[in-house]
Image 1 (cartoon, helix red, strand yellow):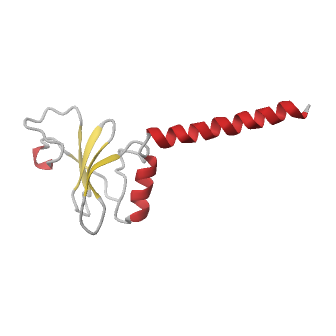
Image 2 (cartoon, rainbow, N blue to C red):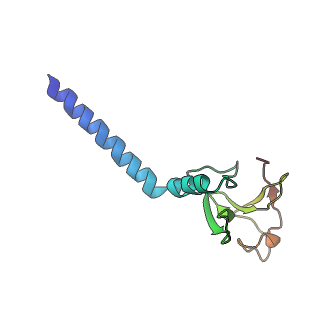
Image 3 (cartoon, rainbow, N blue to C red):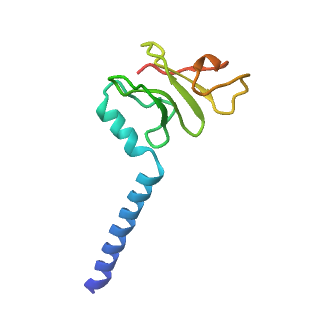
Length: 115
């Protein structure tokens, strides 16, 4: 009688372990968590999530905060402003001469939410 419960427990632990490994390998969760833990000025934009936000340009100075990032829907730019800490724009925008690493080319950027 105890054997079926044992196999159920082993199966559950195995499934949870495999699920955790897949989550770690297929999302930016770990790198975002490290970014948030190592630099207190970092944040994840309100329109994104710790599972989907991917910084693609990081400040190379003494602080390692993101300058530009993306998720499945938007590009983001950190502005250094308290009232509008970041701007974002849909990835499928129609801005002429759009460059995802130059916010000056973002013709229809939306203001991000203050932290």
